[in-house]
Length: 148
Image (cartoon, rainbow, N blue to C red; front, side, top):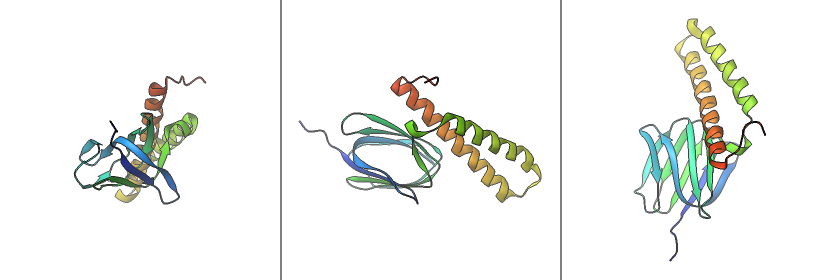
């Protein structure tokens, strides 16, 4: 018995982050979190900042942080065009904390700025929170302690 897979690709403006056969993927969309399995109906959706969980063909689970973008599900392929996408194991907790604190400070100072600036600041905070959630989920999955 062969297990059916899906061709998967996640691309940012800078690079192809991941390209491989997968069993399933769970993504944060504007309508909520969805899981795509083989033979899923075609779909196009906006991605929200959050955590992507990928089950590879070898049954290994990969966790990634995404800051937004688009998802396209085709007959036998899933493509994500992401603003940013980072593998959880590559994330640096200290840098995430520093970036989030900086963004929170900007948010406090932004009470007298226009809506566009405030939206940009809020977006930065969402990105850092997504990175932090991805790192924490990966640590739980891999049983990795932060003290390492």
